[in-house]
Amino acid sequence: MLTTNLKDKVAIVTGSTSGIGLGIAKSLAAQGVNVVLNGLGTAKEVNAIRGEIERTHGMRTGYSDADMSKPEAVRGMIEASAELMGRVDILINNAGIQFTAPAEEFPVEKWDAILAINLSAAFHGIAAALPVMKKQGWGRIVNIASVHGLVGSTHKAAYVAAKHGLVGLTKVVGLETAGTGITINAVCPGWVRTPLVEKQIADLADQKRISVAEAATELLGDKQPSRGFVMPEQLGDTVAFLCSPAGDQITGTSIAVDGAWTAQ
Ligand code: NAD
Image (cartoon, rainbow, N blue to C red; front, side, top):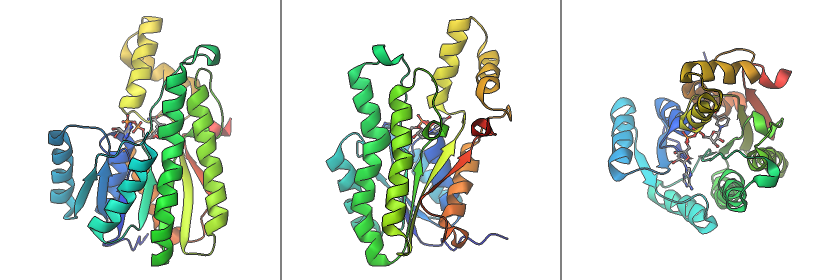
């Protein structure tokens, strides 16, 4: 049986009020990790998520409303979490947004926002967390990249550039921290049915005048040979595995969870 040894560790999961980040927060809490949540949402929504995690897993939660497009806010979130929780053992850089358009029509403000949230936020978070982790002699960083960190698709210039950048950042920090007790890896999911993808399914349904169910099947059929969506909980457990002692020597690399998308 896999032993994760994560009891009473402290994790920060960015973008954990929805989708994949929420799945990761729940998986880590199930392993006995106290979790600082982050992301957009009303106080009522955030409190409901915190309450559910605390009741289900008996772990402590925190929440930061830091805007991941703001470097100082990202760094401030790490410092405030270290102060509030006493330590930072695990950092999951997950917050992300999407926008699709051909490169020559791609709005500059969308390019800037995607690069800031999907790539630069991870850099700022890592830079602020590393000194804390080095002092502790242990740390785990997981960057939620994408299959689009490994291959391209049309109309996703900013997203693909940001995710390839995140995979590159993972390699560099992996080299810089090797042997320190800190590991850093990228997880590269294929299609996961979250609000971020729901919009792309709805757009496809509109564009082709087909039902949402047909559009979802077509989306999968186009790219993901397994024909099944990846579940947020499966990504949560992939992250828990990387944070476990089994992951001690897994660093600077990428794990695709993509139903064979990138095997083609
Ligand atoms: P989602 O839209 O369900 O969740 C995104 C999260 O990021 C939310 O909690 C949102 O509040 C938060 N967020 C957005 N902008 C923010 C900001 N400025 N500051 C703080 N938080 C912010 O999307 P998801 O599908 O769960 O995506 C999570 C990550 O997984 C993203 O990095 C995405 O690129 C990646 N990913 C998703 C898929 C997929 O198929 N859904 C596939 C591969 C990779």
